[in-house]
Image (cartoon, rainbow, N blue to C red; front, side, top):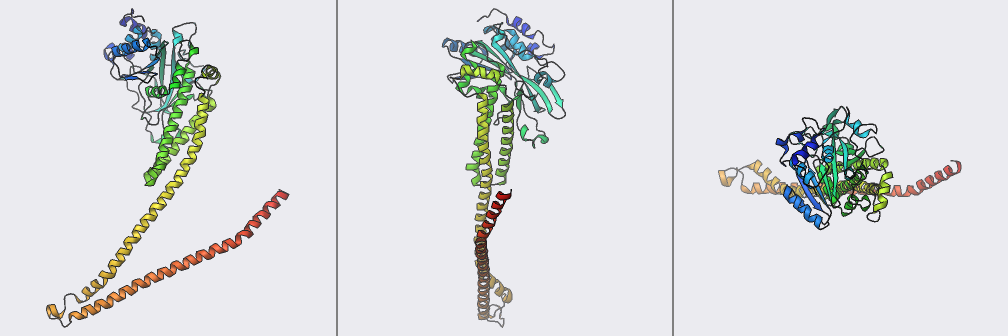
Length: 490
């Protein structure tokens, strides 16, 4: 590793060709690593989060000495780290310049998605051993939130355009470099948020942000989705999820690459397949949690959550079908021949599996709706029984207190033993007994009438069932005869 290039000279080379107002030229505000995230992870599972610059360089020296492979992820890299990593790891300055540059032309979408558009050449140059070790993954976003661009902390500002239909649009870039046979350096931009426009809520295809890259036979590009469990699109988090699967490391460090970097088209296909698979499993876990636990105590909020899950599943199926249909497979198939022994699952096979499992999940979701209705019916029945018990208790209380109320309202305190009234106290008890007997007879009569009515309704239902049962053979015969006639003359 060479450290002979002074930091200042290295930065000057990086900034050559950048606009005069580019943040990378402002050393005063961009020298310190505020608003920068760093993650250094190895295949053996050890990870260092937010290391200092000396710690990172020391850790890589030790990792390289043990001949272990590692990946260094940096989000919104600062001046100091550009100069230090560039000189310590002997990275060509064009790598950082390529990460800072943006597409050319009036329309960012046309520049990225149109084959005739102009943008920096991301194709590795096999004749140049330095360029061969790097790649830039250009992409595009739609429906960005108004708070997504943050120029005060963004060291790599991207182009933003407002479209009357697709809202705020902008580009982004993921740059990666094969620093050595054992190390990748991956640079990402700041996270972005989706627009909160209410018009997007009714469209199942726009529930989350998608990073669209120009590696597809479709003009819309290949979509790399945001993690459903995250509030924003973070390329750093996507790579963390990608590297959590050990076999993905074999894609980055494939032997046939001869210590070179994987092609951006290959990387984007595996990233997309991995993220769609991750989002499907997350959605499946959410639906199963509702079906097995939350439905036990149903509410209107659970119904809303099921409809949200149905919307997310519909959007996922549509995007996965589009990605699978328009995926570029020529160069991908050639790459898979070299790593087939290491991992037989190709991106298109992974997407096919997602679509197949999504169909089963959709049916499970529909069954959950029926289960929710059944749970609500059971809960309503339980509530009705409790109300009936309370009504019975109230009736019993009425049978006791109603005669007392009538007797006291008639006689009040006017009895001989209290205020020398001509009525004696035994008259009150006689009247109370008569009223009590009358109340009991009235309640018993109402109960008897209700029982008779229920008995008649049950008898009517039985008679109706018997009549249907008797007529069913005739109906079946008529249907069979009609089918035979259609067979003869159809």
